[in-house]
Length: 417
Image 1: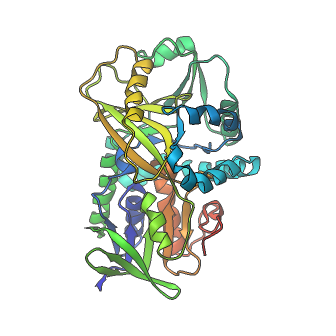
Image 2: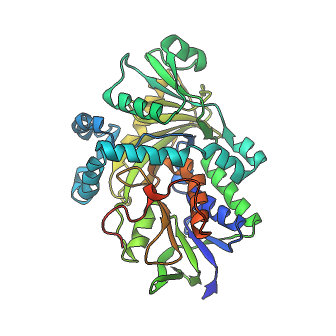
Image 3: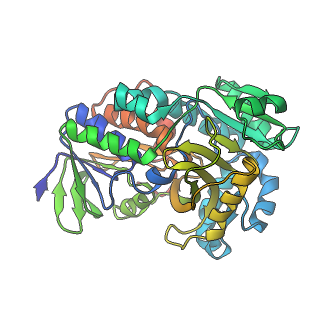
């Protein structure tokens, strides 16, 4: 058995940040993934760093909207009917998470995880790389209606409760801060403390480069099993070899559920499939990310062009993509920015690893010494990576974190030992 004292499984942004944090604390770290660092959702996400975000996906005000969404194959929330029997347990938990108490607890947990994300990246990346990769231009939400929906009212109350800065924007002002916006939008909300990265994959690879400079190593191999001996993790098996370790962090996104199941641990992790379209060399480029709330997508200016990302599709992670769901994003781009032209668009599909309550699992696994979970961030993997890395480092060092780890407990759902 080759030796590696600490192994982080999964080279997405959460795994890369966690591996870097551990290496800087003196761990002998190996980061391992079948794919190149920064593939998967860390390649295709919307790039938003939602500092202080606090709104879970499951809100009670969504209930009246769900039947309409389910009838619309191109709507913002879609369940493929053939997947419904398999997805029903997760969907029932999702509905259960709409209870007022659960929404409140999830909002507090999300806010705690996201509040320090911008400064967290400054610390992880270093000033030069941070300045190169991160733009602190805020984020703009736009609405075609004069009056807020029930879901918007719930979201506003949560944001006010947790002190998130919001600036209302009238219709006339919208075109002043984003001149290319269509005149159909009646109002907006500006979040001045939000930021975004111009290239989420390059950000992840920069973290990996910093890991190697800190003495960590990176392996390209598919992990097939996490090895344990009684109540102690002892390493990971790959397609080619077994690597010994005293500590293993499972941060493999949607693949984490299968690896956890191999240990006899069942977690309700679901692929919330999301699409993106990139319009290269666009004729208009917003100054900041612009989100169309009713259509559940966001347009982010990036190095590759204008990226339009969003929507939710509940289906198997292995199901083929639905090209129409990507194409509708390109159509919506023209609704957001009339007359926009670009080079030939590219499309992408990714599998957000999501728990019903919009909280990741971050923590040590009871009964398996040395094993930690760090997955299930859903829409907030990029935003939540610095917090996750810090919490895992604190738990391994047996330090009391400066925040409450209980909301992310790996035992909060039934079925896990």
